[in-house]
Length: 90
Image (cartoon, rainbow, N blue to C red; front, side, top):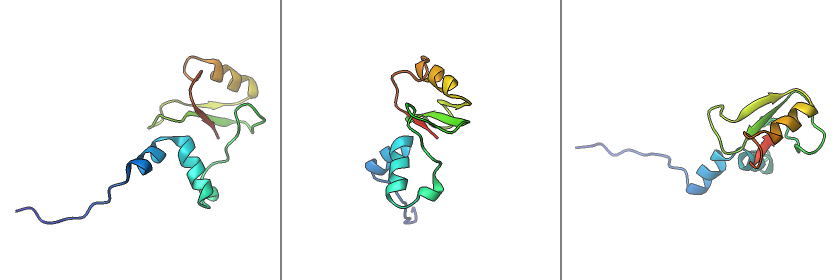
């Protein structure tokens, strides 16, 4: 006979927030956890380079590149990999 056990099961909302890098970043900042997340920049505005450009809906290092200049950022944003997708620049 199996023994009773407990499990922490996140809500669908929590899973969605964890799966989307931009949602998670906003959640962390809204809850006073700014010290634990990297600085985030608007990709259309001034950023500090090098920076990390991320697709927001990928995991395990997929859809992540280091950009070293504004020109490189613009080229990546125009590329097939990033064009038309939600991104986060940190």
